[in-house]
Amino acid sequence: MRCVKLLLFLLLVGAVVFSCDDDTSPTLPPATPGGGFIVATYTNVDNEGPIAETAVAVAGNWQEDLPGAAGDATPFNVTTNSLGLAAVQSARAPAEWTFTWISSEYAPAECNGVTATNDIPLNSTQAFTCLILTGSESASIVPSSFSLSPNPVYISSAPSSGTVFGSGISSTYGMPLVQYYTLDGTLVAQENATSVSSDGTSMQISGFSITQLPVGTYAAFVSNAASGGGYTYLGTGAVELADGGVDIVGDEQSTQKCVREVDGGDCLEWETIYDEGTVSVTVNGVVSSVTYDETSTPYTLAVALASAINSNASVNSLVYALAAGTSVLTNSQSGAQYSLSATAASRDTTFFPYGSFTPEASSSIF
Image (cartoon, rainbow, N blue to C red; front, side):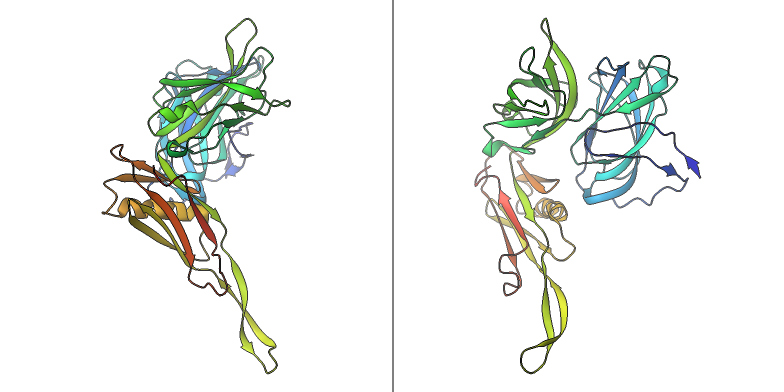
């Protein structure tokens, strides 16, 4: 039994779990379509503010799945680009991963070898900020937590406004700035906030300017306006852009059914029954369906529906589907527009008249 170095490590989302680790590697699940997240690396000397750190080698090792996990659990090694970003395109998510800051061309050597474990949401940006304190011989990983809503963003029903959530957001010297980058480090759009909450935990933006961009995952860099001009970097989030999609809502339902009655109508024996049924997505008049049962969740249904669409020879040449959390993203292969609808139905309408799950299409055309 060896204990990994205990270091303060927080990722962009979620709470951190530190543990002692034995030398037994977990059994990897089979790879499936989907998954992916972004790694972002920064250094912060004496809490003076994070600076993007380039050419950082980061290793990742899968530990266990979270509900709705998809993608590849194979260990990975990536090196961040000129913006301190590295896309791990098909890494399994949502899932628990252990990350290690292996080395860097420019960052202080104190950052090398820091290791920690955390839950990684799908299509999130995982911000590694190496905190270096003068006089200390070690380094820590500290939080940089920002998220955007709505997420995913559907081009076919572009939102009129959006919200960025985080901490330390300020309008003291002007409205904060959001800059959108492709995963290869190209700045493609930016916009200023229209208002900031009094506690500095959120800001409103008038609309996602990225809805004019190609579909895909974008890194969102959030910065405060600085005194004397310019901006001070705060943190990074991620947003997924799709032509259209279907959001799956609901929970598996169950009820008690009498299986043994006596005279007079009293019940001597009850059993638990679970709702079973189908969820369907129709693209350009072509239906792709999956079944649900007591093991189903919105996450598993999104993964199954994306797979069903991509396996449907009558429609997979027109669109490509991707599971993103509890959503099924539908993207046109050619840029042409197609009709979109979704339905769900229980097989037992006596006990489950409304069914357990409701699929909501982003729009009738995407």
